[in-house]
Length: 373
Image (cartoon, rainbow, N blue to C red):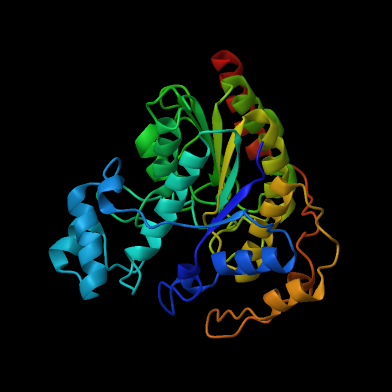
């Protein structure tokens, strides 16, 4: 089996959704720089993402929407009818300079990843994970839905049964829209209960292969560990997939401003480790994440784990320099990072008792899983 592959692009280095948008922060470029500073990207492991052409995206997105998205980038404006129909030029989905090229690049990475996974292996594309995109409209900061496009690419490459696991703080409504009635696509989502888009109730089973576990506000590592051991890993193992797609949104960690979960990055890494032996093909995507230090540290740890690199207790000076160079202007103030945000990758565990709400949800899903298996 070949070494894992990292798909990135320089387009993310200076691209921003705007000075007041949550996605004003650097993310993918931080992961690229941090992994290089650690010496974790060997010759031949890094690939520059292609930009997907509109014609290749019509497997999920409508031609009218794709044309509107390209035109909005060209003119840097939208008419009111386009805004109403396609949700472009809104507060969540603003007009910015690369609003076509940037999502088309992350879509191209996911589609390339599916092609590369014709043979067993692992592909990491941290720019991926835009799981809210809908066929005819932008949604929740997501202009295109690269997880859907990546799953479709895996299918074209011969993977019949695909497990999609989403541990973002927000439910994967766009991916659910695409595959909820497909018995050959297992959908598992943990997400904050009551958080936008307020979809993904525990009672939703799709065609029987959908497992949603809303987590209470304040959920900690123990809650996620129970979900991992009682629902996520048993469901994936029982499904026996040809490929796994993991959407590893970093917005569930304690420091993130877009959720009220209180996970450490260890919770995400433990799920990744548990999934790795369960299928011959693994696609690891990014997702949400709006604190530049925590998202950069978490996703860089993902790359270390799939390569078997040891995560040191203290980062070497070149890696610390990458994190010290980050700037984040929050709510009318400049955020000064605590020292561990720039000297370490691993968070201290966020321990705490498992909530009764999560125990009840896991019990309900475990019972349904036993019948499904």
